[in-house]
Length: 280
Image (cartoon, rainbow, N blue to C red; front, top):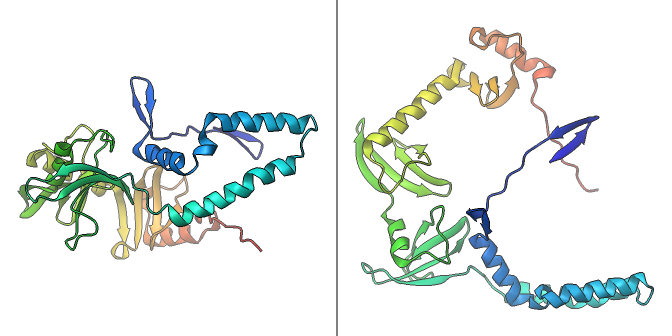
């Protein structure tokens, strides 16, 4: 994407997550669900003849055979009514699919779209006992997942043993698989399989994260209230969780507390404030 600001052209590469296989694109589960909802409730707008009809009406308007405001009124009147009716009567549309029965508990196993994306569910929502939930893994789909694959999702969290006297477990969360140890969380690399990763590999990842965090802090003052840190875009200063730029001619490792305070008081190093225009 190209943007023009202050007489300068800036280039930015944007990305969007979608399903693909061998250069072919496939709709995501949410995309399929949205399509099903629209087809069910707004089929007349989605069918091919609708677009053709609208184009014909535009031609009539351009030739003076029809008034544009009448054409808009004829469409938006019924369409608005349809939207309001759908909002009141359609109810929750989760794309729920029954896969079968859990052999251990005898409860139904479903897959559907939840608040944070596709998930598997053991047990009925309206039952007295609270159902169990597990998020689908990357590459799994509501349309193709099997009962066996869904049940395997409930093998987590996996307890792998102890390290430094604390339990090490592997789980799958909203943002993917992770390791939990001593109340802290460590992301699992893409090449590691959460279903088979071992204790030794988890320890390696725990130590890797500790090393990164150790190297992140360059200097600390006042019990951590004032920190000089290594960031993604270089060293910076943070005071009570407010970040400040460090001038280029300053060596971060040589900063004193007094110099940090001075940098924070310089308006040139203050963080940029974002203003939101309010409607009058």
